[in-house]
Each structure stands twice: as structure tokens, then as C-alpha cells.
Length: 337
Image (cartoon, rainbow, N blue to C red):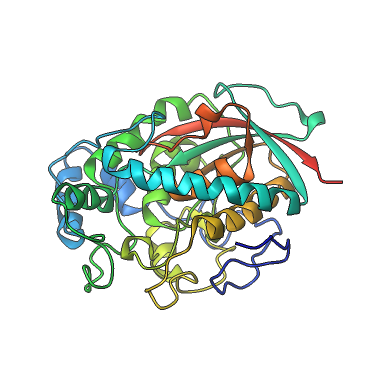
């Protein structure tokens, strides 16, 4: 792996991302439409089981409310640990090459949700959220428990794309709903979501009250996309479909109709590719005027961000995110010389 050029792009051909502020009105900003159907289903009593049962048939998972095996900062599930350890080794090498090329250095300290922000020190408080359990998470767990080779959601094993842009399971909806109590005690100024459904749904459910009141604008950002390519669960729906599903989300920063990272569906981003992409997002975040932000994303993206881009004070706070976990970090930005 060679050194990083600040102007270098990830291996996937993606057009230049907008780094200017979006306007939280018009295409899905606050004030337009209701919450997405999945979010409504999550909060309207008996509709939940029927709605999610229908969705589970499409995604080939179980809708019996099976619980996620791990949902804390303690780390990965048993079947994930080997892969996570390998990724962490690559990210350690990536960090040594990537960080010196960045226009900024950013330290990250885990803090209480209501911790103050020192404006004079270039600080931002960010609630990083991993999506709740998805049908693809259940499928992988069962696949590996059965000692099957590969993954359950490649073109070979999922030719009908039934796991495309994977949805939350009932347990995942419960995990997102459980975050409401913490979300009610904070007043973020902006929520950024991955354009993928499981991350968008989790953020919208957790911060539903603020979003519905119009107090919290929501914008989708492609740079928060999960590790992309090869896995059908990580291929997002079209921008048109997503904007219909989530009218509260602005897609003004999503430049392409289809997923720009899918390519031929045979090649997957490396952890290093994701780290480069994440570094561009963190730089965009730095440029934002808001000081209190929510970011709803994915395990692979968060692992790369916390281990190759941010300089996390305590290594215990840079571990694998459990499904439905929210970790509040105080980011302190320093321009590079």
C-alpha cells in the first residue's frame, strides 16, 4: 500500500462531493411530508408486526423479534471477531499513512451526551450512531453458524437482490426506539445520515421528536455509506426511491441517482478505501457551522473513522460499535501546519 495523496480518490469512481451547506428545505427538508412508512410502523402499535413481516419476506429474514447477540460498546459478535481484528490491523497501517496527509488533526474524547462544547477551541460534539440490527446481520450470523462459505448476500448467493439496502429487523427497530430517551435530552443542530435505509431509519426513529417538530434538519451524505461493493445489502436504492421513502431527509448532497460505489458488484472497498472516504466526510463536518451533530452510519465506516481518521483519546472508545449503539464524542479540530 503506497502513501496517500490528499487529492487521491478511493478505488471507486465517485464524482466530487458537494462541500457547501445544504438548504434544509425543498427536497425533503423539515416541513415536507411525514415520517417514512417504516418509521411510522415502528411507533404505531400493532402495525409493527404486520408491516415488518411483509418486509422480512422480501429480505429473506425472520420477523419473529429475534434479539441481536451484541448491542453494546463491548465489540463484535463472536462470528465477526476474526474479521474485525484483521480490519483493525489494516486500519492501523492506514492511519500512519493517511493522517499526515490531512488538512486537519482531530482528537476525539468520549463524553456525556450533555457535555458542553468550547467554541473557542474548534470543538464539535457528535453523537455517532450505528444502525439497529438489520436482516443482513441476522442472515450473516445464521450463515456462519451453519459454516457456509462466503456471505449470504453476494451476487452468487443473492442473485435476486432480496437483501438490497437491507432493512431493520423488529429487534433493530426496538434498538433505535430505545435511543429516544437519550435523544430527548439533547438538542443537536443537524443530523447526517448514510443514504442507506437502515441508517436513515435508525436516525429518524431515535430523533423522531426533534425531526417531526422541524427542530432537527436531516441530510443524507454519500460519504457515510457502508463499505461498498460486492454485498447486495450494501447497495443503496436509487435517490428517487429513497426520497419518496424518507421525505424528511434532504438528498441535496446525493449527486448520483444510483449507488456510485456498486460498480460491477464483484469488487469490494478495502478498509483503507473507507478510511479515505471518511476523512473527506470529517473534513466536510469541520467546515459545517453546526457544533452539535448526529451522524447515523454503519459498523465498517465507524470502525475506519475511529481508528484511521480520528485520534481517539482512549482506545476502548474506538472499538466496534454494537447495533443500535450511540457514542457521543467531543471532536477538537486543529488545522495542519
